[in-house]
Image (cartoon, rainbow, N blue to C red; front, side, top):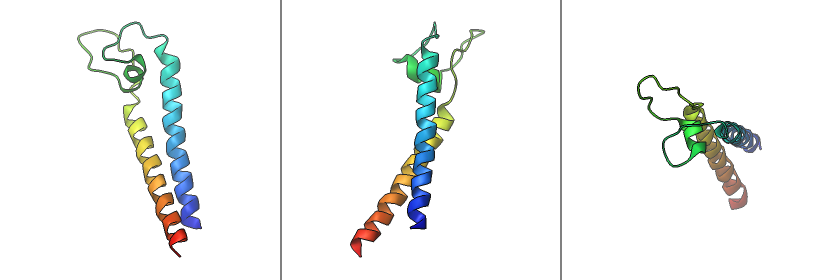
Length: 89
């Protein structure tokens, strides 16, 4: 039971981080005037290389986004494994 709670909190924390970053990127993407790539949202989150003295209009939250996604995945794996052990009995 404790591992199920731990897995749930790890997954919830990772999802909360990812969704918060996506929400902040979506809010910030409306004020970006210059970007490179396909999407303003992913440019606002991950950024791109800076050329010369141009102003960087990105939040550069790619690393915390990836860490949050890893936490959500690890929590989901813990939950899946514990539920598998519960139903196997």
